[in-house]
Amino acid sequence: MASSCRAVYVVRHAEREDNINRNWKKLAAVQNLADDNPMLSQRGRLQAKECAARFKNIEIRNVFASPYDRTMETASIIVADKGLLVKPEPGLCEVLHHCLNPPGFWETIKLKQKYPLVDTKYVPVFTKVSPCKNNVTVTYFTVSVTLTSSFVLGDLLLVSHAPPIGAIHELWDLRYTCVGQATVSKFIEVEKGKFRLEFSADASHLSSQRNLRPF
Image (cartoon, rainbow, N blue to C red; front, side, top):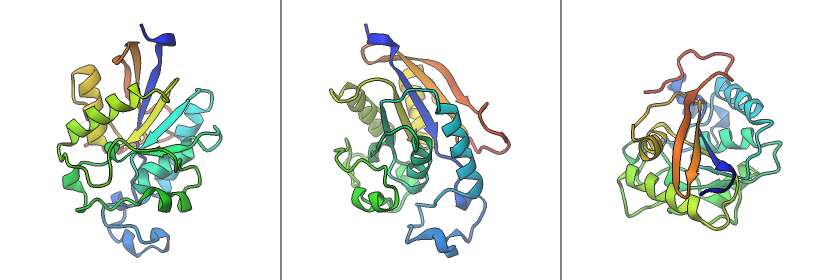
């Protein structure tokens, strides 16, 4: 049996700037972001801070995030006061038909310059250019390898996008589930490598639950 019922929290990134502003690339804050790599909106940063408040008294041991800007910023805000580093994992990235070819997220060293909490020592399961273009398979493999790695102990936080999070639900709850932005899902390990869903797409921490874009 798994020790102490390890928990895995899964958070979708907060609201993206391009959700509300089609001219987002003209903003000064863009800083050479690719077309598929928008940053968080002002509302998104508030949502991420509200996620951080929710996790304030929850002990997390490891944090993994898709290397896109919106997921890295969401994760960095959540763990800002936890003394943790964020591990960029391309295996948690957006579905490839929503991405440039190759995907437009930054490499780890460049991410570190913008987000100081990036863990540059982490070796990701998948690289930027993966030989497998089936994102469900990529998600399954990434999550399985991550959770069986010897260095991964205690409760985990995964920050990702709607399709990979849907795939995680399918992997552990047998149902593909669409979740809203900045929502939290929780899975509990009931035995080695087997998890049950405790709750899905919870938005109770958000001051506004309107238009969270689950689809």
